[in-house]
Amino acid sequence: MTGQPDAARRRVVVAITGASGAIFGLRLLELLKTVPGIERHAVISKAGGLTLQAECSLPPSHLDRLADQVHANGNLGAPIASGSFRCHGMLVAPCSIKTAASIATGVTSDLISRAADVMLKERCPLVLAVRETPLHLGHLETLAQLARLGAIIFPPVPGFYHRPESLAELVDQSCMRMLDQLGIHLDAAPRWGEAGGVPAIGGTGGRQA
Image (tube, rainbow, N blue to C red; front, side, top):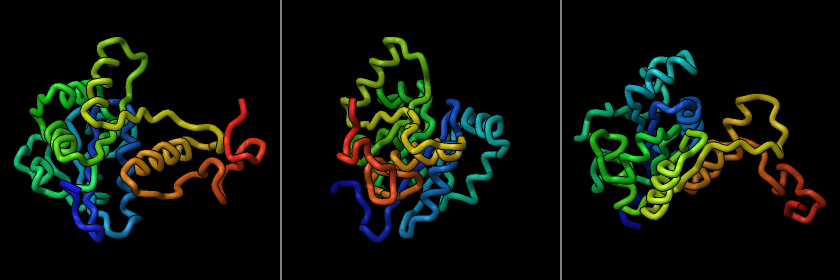
């Protein structure tokens, strides 16, 4: 597939923007670090750094411990800004509406939006964990345009069927499902109806109304 590295070395980009939910990007990097053969690239916006500090009491420099390479958001010459740099996929988590709008309109004035645009043009998975509610019509139209362009719109809406007992379990369930979209399967949380997961209602493998 165009833009894909060989199977033995998968490059994944994780971007953190200024929307609430910096823990999602942080946890994605932690989970990816446990997967052999994954080369982790991270980018954090200025607002994302402020949110990471406010919500997780961590400085942006903490990403140096989790990623193989951390790129400055202003560095449009970074490897991930080019389609010739083969990449397996990108997750923007959390994704602000500002970032979503930049990607949807092709206004790639920073590295996050440029790298996301590269994912779209190279037909690589782009997962956008949009964090905003309620959504007005302009937001919805932006997300619809992104879906038409090929992005995966993934609001981190938690499931409760596995009866989570902590915030960490809710985060892990959303992150697990985001990584599924890239074909990276980790059992970070129980899965519905699967062996060792959550039994399906009635034992039929599906929900009942």
